[in-house]
Image 1 (cartoon, rainbow, N blue to C red):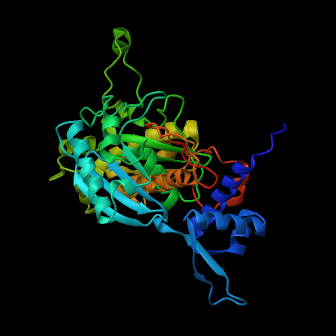
Image 2 (image 1 turned 90 degrees about the vertical axis):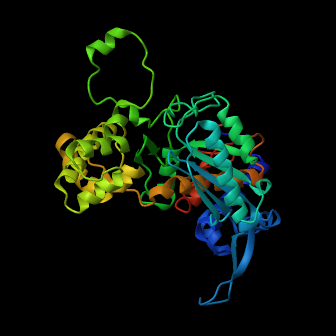
Image 3 (image 1 turned 60 degrees about the vertical axis):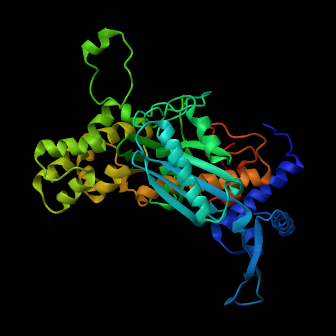
Length: 433
């Protein structure tokens, strides 16, 4: 099949993106190294570096030393070219960081998630954002892109959160607009488990993996799905909502009612969430186990009742992982969240024993390397891509809530992915805004 020739402006953007990706991923980089990494000609790389310098995205950062032969100019990202505000709306904490375009954190804040409904949460979210921005000596108007990681999902064509039962009023149609007004900067929203998966792929235990899932088990339960190196959402934006997985047949009495259920926490979430772990520990007589961390601490100290809790939790998780593996066949399953990452080696070791007993699939198992930072690390990676799109003039419209993808951007083609493969987690692709 013949394709129409690419337009000069499009080719220029593709080349600028390819060169920037290499410089961003590799750190200070020489002209010959960029040529080698991108496959572009020497004159083209020279021209692109000049264009990136004119836009304030790349700058000279010294010369090589300690090498044989003449010294060479080193190019690096100009960190002050753009600023990314990353926010994690947790059920217990509201966390924010501000990063420069190199990805370095320059401001940070954390505030307890208040009760009292969505309005109170948005007010405190704004406070967390202001504190982080102020610590970076910036104003809200300086922020190039904001990314909000949140419980809930977006159905296609909607501008509201769905399936977010743990935050009172969070599914109201007014919430996304109120957050945009509170943050001032251009905003995109993304499911927290999805961002955690992107974080693990960028800087965590899934670096270099193209097919894996992150099973997020905490107050809520969800799953980020990465297949062929891209985040997958499904036809209705609900891919990975594993909290609603049914591992038992639907009772006949339920089938006869004909009344659609009021979806709150799903059946699987009720079995494995942080609350389920605490309730199980209480039933088995674990002393002082008011948080999952206390249960796991007791188990590590040798408490037999706490170890029984771990065994039951691992068996329940194994059933879900077996189901997911039969459908997706992931290379790796990462456990995240206060239960998944908190249980860490305890859960991984028991899962490695239980899973082969119930499934012929044998994905590798790991606990999150990033812990509670996973969502913010994913937001930082996504926000940097979106900020670069904005600075390069790729986007001509404001992002809609939930309108983010890690597949090809409007300027991405296979040549970019081939040119920069292995250099950056999102080489050749960015979230579309």
